[in-house]
Length: 285
Image (cartoon, rainbow, N blue to C red; front, top):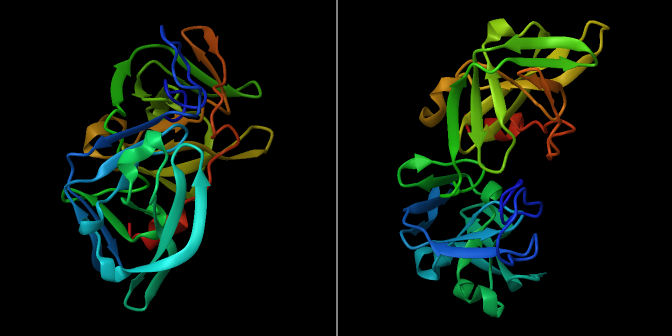
């Protein structure tokens, strides 16, 4: 549903049938996971019967049966919005003790025909809540998409990375990370990166890989390119093979693979990454 996925706004491939118009797909399915939402130290939603909603161009969203949400924490709101795929949404503010999140939850009293299973179910703004849990593991950024896959494979392909004609790294011992809907990422041993690095205070979080830290690169001419490299010093267990390795934004550098130039992919990161250091600090990580 995101990036260049088959039901995204900019699909990479083609179908042998007439698919939904790019950006218009909506997919709803029951989730088998036990999901909980915590705000102000109290659990406000606790369900083993959530509906996972995937919408073209967006990350997945959990919708909760009303009986699995604390009614005493909800306050009616006058806010209404309209979605062309789902219908008109109404909102609740959420109050836990002295803590109030204005318009923090929404629902569709009368959804459109194609979104009928949403009727009355409640959803929460992920980043306005304090904690989310799938089973007994805390999950960050957004729900994990059950159809999202990450593979990390060793490769002996010869990779040369340069910028403005200056070679920044060369390696034939990279880890290739293939992640659904995203360009291939090349994680290189630190000793194969010859660029002059400057540590950055930028940090971002990925629900599939963990917390990433960043480096700026100082070019030979004196220019500093901010947050051109990222690394996971303590990645999640599923991608341990990238621990400590360095990865360049191939949207912002020139990559030659086995002697063949690779084009720069078009993604939301082609102009850099927004720092989430403050958000991570608020989450106590």
